[in-house]
Amino acid sequence: MQRAIRVFGSVLLWAVVALCCAIIVVPRFLDRIYYEGPASPHFDTARFFNPDGEDTAAPPTGGSRTNFFVRYFLQDDGRPLWPTHVAVTPSKPAARVDGQRMVVTWIGHATVLIQTQGLNILTDPIWANTSGPYGFGPRRVTEPGVRFVDLPKIDVVLISHDHYDHMSLPMLRQLWGRDKPLIITSLGNDKVMAGVKSVARDWGGRVNVRPGIDVIVTRNHHWGTRFMADRNRALWSSFVVTLPGGNLFFAGDTGFGDGKWPAEARAYGPIRLALLPIGAFRFLPGQMSIASHIGPIDAAEVFQRLGASRAIAIHWGTFRLSYEARDTPPKLLDAVMKCRTDIGGGRAFTAVAPGVATEVASMLPEPAMAAPVTRDQVIHCLDTPQVRALR
Image (cartoon, rainbow, N blue to C red; front, side, top):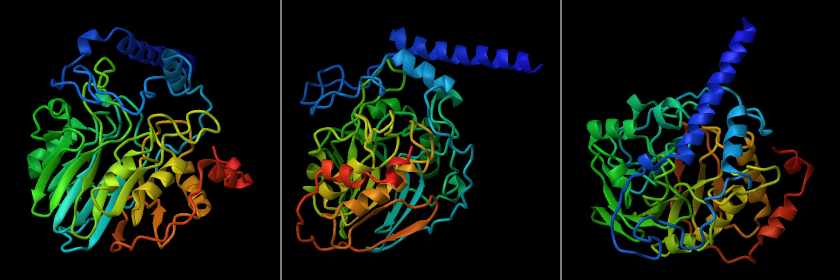
């Protein structure tokens, strides 16, 4: 009986692998045109691209894409074990937070509730149990920090790109049906979100929410797809939300690229809070980043370049998307921030638990510029038994 179960499981697993390979190799019928417009520094009239260098297409391990997916699905890639389930005590946010108070609740992955100025802003809302199409994809390990039924009325939703772990169409339709929020995204994603009214802008585009509060679509370094064949048919982005008490920056999903995009976001005004990804970065032993994602080392550099008063870590510990252990990103971030002696003046970049309402202090004055710390200096500082033991 056990042998029959193992055989059936192997057949099923290889069927899934074959399906994934078929989607990658012969997917022309899945291609879609999401946006049509003139050429630009990041659009060739057919597909978008990273103007600072296109390095996101290669498999993360450097080998063949088919081999990467086969080893991933067979779990034959040396990944550290994750827990199968992390329980969370969900919180119930206030209906509104008025004035310049800012309360932020990390719900999980890149889903964050930001409450300030009487507005409820939600980023990349995902409550699904899996991060792929039709129930496939990595399973959710950590429960949402806020149950959807306890979510206050949402006014603004920011959608960074069309990957399934950031754009959940069932959830967006549910939100739209319940609250009719202003949904803001980058070019092409409005066509992906069929049945949901949204506003799409190019990098640098601005959407007015109300007097004194705008959402600006800003550059980052990533890619997009729903079916592989439609790769980069829609644009990826970060966002700046201009606020009277200091701006909000949401990085979305991003690699480091040329590292100039944080200064572009900073140019729109002082940043009170940055939401920065720190996970899905260690695809090979010893790696601290990958072209599509920033790990804690590069995230801390982004924090410094943004000049933000506070940053909260996102994009870790919810779905198992790469090779690092579940708690490696926050542990490494803590070590990195201790090595970064040039980030001072009371500025903090930390991980928080899902569901915990975090009060964000008012803007801090610009600190005196300390001598910059290089990436090599940070890596040298991290060469300790504790960091070397992380996987």
